[in-house]
Image (cartoon, rainbow, N blue to C red; front, side, top):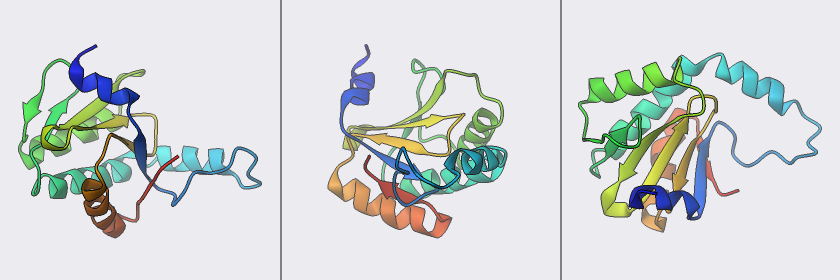
Length: 143
């Protein structure tokens, strides 16, 4: 395993459409809501793009669609195109990765999910992300 992927074994947080994890025995209709939002991947991908672009004002980020080739600080249009294309037809069983080298944090985006997962974030990074996701109507929480 590449050193960056060892971060997948570290503690993680979630950037999500909901403010906390839905209990397994919830009386609500989480799975119907999730399917509803997955049908709106384009809008969701725009939220992720705006968060990452704003984060890139503070930190270098590296983007990878295959886990082998990384692009340092992709142009805003390139980042948007990569995330949009991935979220709207990305390969199944694959992830899109964003590596924040200075923070030793990995962000994984799963095309079939309504969230981004942050592995090994510092408290400082979590505080910044909470501020960045709020205007997008998203939340940061720990499972």
